Image (cartoon, rainbow, N blue to C red; front, side):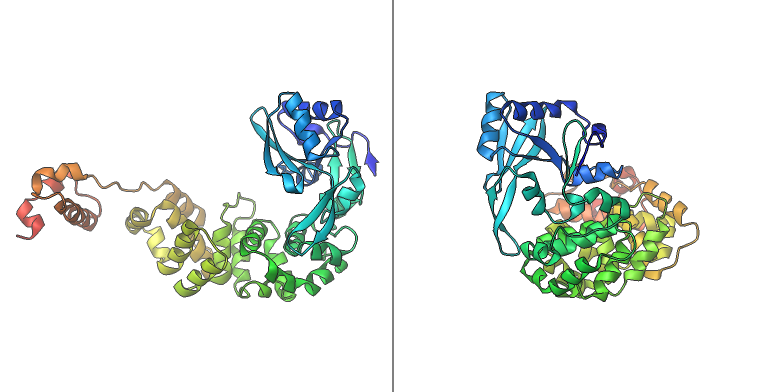
Length: 410
């Protein structure tokens, strides 16, 4: 259960000033430990998640201890036992040990405790219930380290009970399986996910979207989504996607390269939506206004590989919609066709370094050509159209040399 000096603390923290908080808590009769994702990731030698800490002090005791030591705190989730502690401009979330008194599948009513194993027992997965102190001693109450080493992702205790405490744990199970799992999913965990899948309907769509998008960024996303589809997990919250193989094609194309952080784009690939479905999906998953606009735009504006590989048409696309849009459409079209275009990576690089033309005229340049200020907008539009028709070759002087009568149509 306890592994002495098992973890190199440098893998957990980069700023040693954070360790001051351990001394403060100890001076006030408490214990402080790192917990959860950061510990799990450090054990696996991967870039860590955000730091979370746990203490056997109550929230009030922690705040009092910090105040006496001149450390600022902020209220983050006092009701649930979480206090924000600011050390060297770094905000740390410190949560008091808890046990669940009552749960409804979304929220929990908690009571504070000083028992570390009790606190561990309320967490979802064994791999997320590992603690470490500032000396690198690791406290593992449910064999999370062994599960990590074997690639086993399983719930603590009764999988059915853990899921009923918060149905989002169904999606979390699949996400962590996609990251750490080896072989087939744990049978008890999968069975409990299937039996409780209808509970996903109780969750806010924002929480579902966040988990799905995190899953899409994992290395085994395609394999995991297939398992979810086979067991009708996703159908309880959205239409089943039909284009998993298209996403698989794109991910394999990027094998060995840094994948772009575009979960929204990967989600689009899974559905290949037309404009109506894109709008419906964006509304259903409650995308932000900016996300929805981008998502629907991908579906609305049809772009071919030929346009993206032709320097002149690419320049027009980049001017109208931006260089990022062109890169995204290259990925979307490639995934849709499931066919790598010749010299793909050079095409990708060419789009990245494409210089977007800049319209050379501003409103102030036209003041002597109009009698009313409201005419400037129409005149700008006319000049811009001429400039685009010239394939961006007309200079500012070329455009301004045009007579007003010609521009105004008089």
